[in-house]
Image (tube, rainbow, N blue to C red; front, side):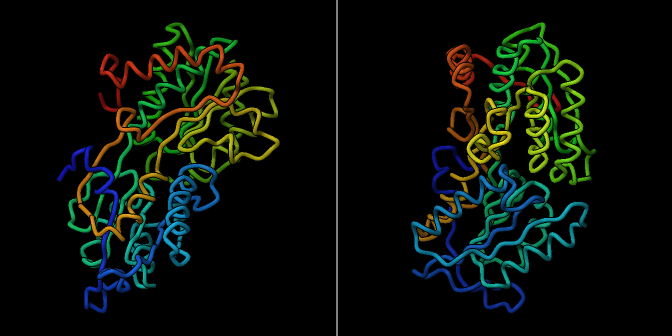
Length: 344
């Protein structure tokens, strides 16, 4: 089912119990007890300073505020089969977690297989909304919308009239970032040149965890004339930031405000970030376990729902282009601009 946006705060939550099935039981977190949290991270895991860390921030907030035990956490690996991902989810559940945050669309098919085995364990699937199970809430984000806004930032701030995009893996999810970014750049400055490249092709998830390749790819775009590159490549973003710093250029982050978590050596090269509020989704999911208000279903959150946003960190650029980009943001919220998505 598709949950209404008005009930987002509820459907990003869970209650849990004990299945009584030795192969499919988490700990007894229901019936008034505190949830036992587990996290299945995507490739890069906690510490990627991007997608996974955004989800982790919400988990950490919930654990602290609710006085919960330290979560059971495991992270994905590049180029592993779905069977390994399935076993990882099972391992987290079998270690006592009854409220499990699953991060990244690469874990969606494994969760589709595993979720029915643990009917009393509740899951939130971040970045995929295709699983129809009574114990799964799927949350997707309109990544094309916040990418549109940072595309406008890049085009308006560029001094060479050329900008770049580095995507982690060439598949639909990241294609949405690219399409939105290019549309926003062209909306703001129709004659801007946009150079878009990917680190790996579909199915090869190493593109999300290869800063070296990210750095080389960004260097190529800077050498070709771009002075701003938007990185949507998970842990590989760090390589893009290094390239920007070394060449005296600018970069744009994604999923979280990457200026806040970047190393000091690259920090000032990050002028903006496209923000995806995974922290809000994971926090609300865990918090609502105590409220006993879980609803299965899938929601897609955009600018209108405060599920995505953008931030400009460079104050000079913010003063020059911020008002214009904020106007574009409002036009999207009001339905005056329809941002294209991959496949259209």
